[in-house]
Image (spheres, rainbow, N blue to C red):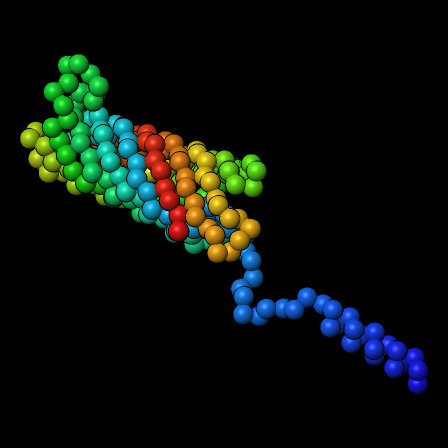
Length: 198
């Protein structure tokens, strides 16, 4: 009779001294850069085949991405482009007389990465996708160019508040190298970009 009573008292005391559980608060989930929606911009330089002519390109782009799986993100990009026969920095160049618009849709995933001081993440990502460009100049007229692409992104991001569910701001800087296949041949895009996460 005494032993069950003592056991009951000890159990009640242990329950009373335990930390209260707040069921109204969501569980704390570690935040990573890959788990955020992001919006950013990029400046790019490259080469592109337009009407059997190999053109130099300069572009300004907007980038939007959304996580779909733990390590895979879908992204969409829009570029305003200028293009011409001469290199953009060549003294003999008369500028880039052609201009147009280009869109990309693709997937990216991290190949390797490491985190320093629980806040700075270094990464190397692979990407693949496709898109469409509408370009125009005085020689070729209007050209509509579908394309496929594959590339690599290398960079770093800062994640504030990885250990706090309510603090999840992200800032990211990256370098991009992308091969672009169009009906006339294979071109390239090299760029530097910055992104911000929600």
